[in-house]
Image (cartoon, rainbow, N blue to C red; front, side, top):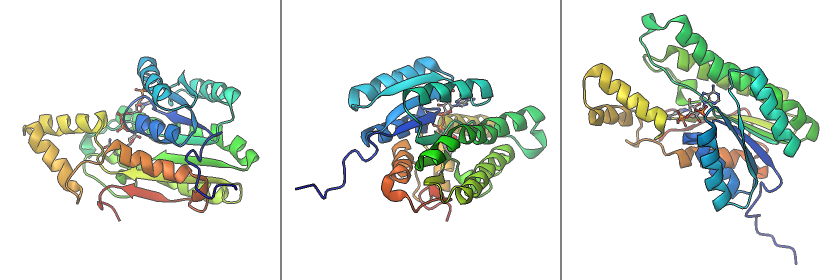
Length: 265
Ligand code: NDP
């Protein structure tokens, strides 16, 4: 008799490309998708780190894990990365996770700060979507999940460029979701609050350095922003991303889902 249990590996046969998959939230997403059976291609600039993460995943999940060097600011390198990934198996899941965060008072944001942030977080996401979407639409199935931020749905002081880039990511998510609605491809954004990764550690060190308070106090200041009084864990963000990638999430599209302990609602 056929089983009526949901499959333990509902993404078996799917291939996910994750930008910035070597560490932090990207590595946690890679782990969550591998546990659901997806084959993976991890893309980033730090090849040693990508390979280290891939080796750990190969040891823990029976899926194929490839790594490809790519910089989201360099269109040619990303086109080559997608081509290599698709040659192994069509990419049916795209996780746009690569991102940078710099902070400065509004009056001290120079063109370099602005351009780097918009190029990496927004234009990089747009270009990867452009590279991945046509084949997904043609195949009639796809999942695009953009890691935006609570900074994509609310403002924070000293982060004008970052907030603008992440609001842009939410906007392009919503617009493509409508355009793609009848193609079988869903497009969503996940909006983490402060999450315990290298990026949050840098933010804490930065607040401590700029205010002259210790790192403990700076950490308390950041955790106070979250009503749950803590940093979000990368695995919590990853589980939300994985849920959006499930076949059963096909009616969820165009959403910006906060994973932030109630900080944004
Ligand atoms: P990390 O700094 O730990 O990781 C950033 C990742 O982005 C790395 O894997 C890095 O890979 C990749 N990356 C950065 N620039 C490029 C580039 N030009 N080309 C390719 N890859 C790049 O940060 P997190 O894991 O915390 O952040 C992941 C995402 O989550 C980001 O988009 C961030 O904005 C978002 N986010 C994070 C929050 C937090 O508090 N941590 C909160 C809300 C959102 P490599 O070095 O190999 O290139």
